[in-house]
Length: 180
Image 1 (cartoon, rainbow, N blue to C red):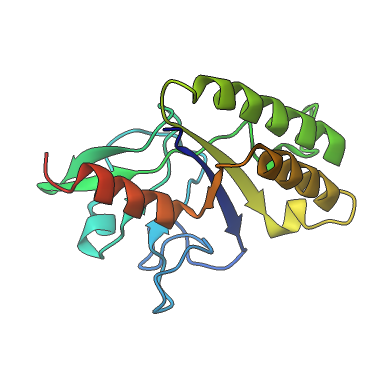
Image 2 (cartoon, rainbow, N blue to C red; image 1 turned 90 degrees about the horizontal axis):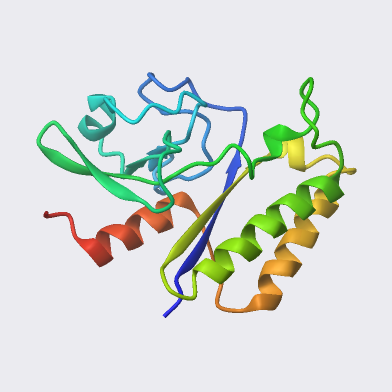
């Protein structure tokens, strides 16, 4: 069975930063106003994961680009799930100097091409795709149409699970367990 997850991470400008008691400005919250996980901050390190995440009950970390699927790391003697992030399928690539992603069409074409490749690979093994979306970038009138095209393309395939990082982390824990 094909398991393809698309992590749409809608991030806001709020929050106190990666090291504060409230991690980042992520829009992925537990329901009590606190974040469920720490979004990527383009550091891309694999370890060490800050113990503050585990101490404060964070479900996941998302500051890694080193794999295609979530995985567990040990932090303070506990298993902690890492939900991968991606810089290439990220709206932060819109004009920021010498980057070549200039239009909504450029973004949609690139993300759809990446999706199609993972879709083919997903016929034999589970796949996950992370698409980083930031309200101040994708939400602009000249860019939002690219997201509309991406969602229409993916939806037309069927059997695509559009999920928040938190949902992906919870599914990973349910499927592969907290224990080794």
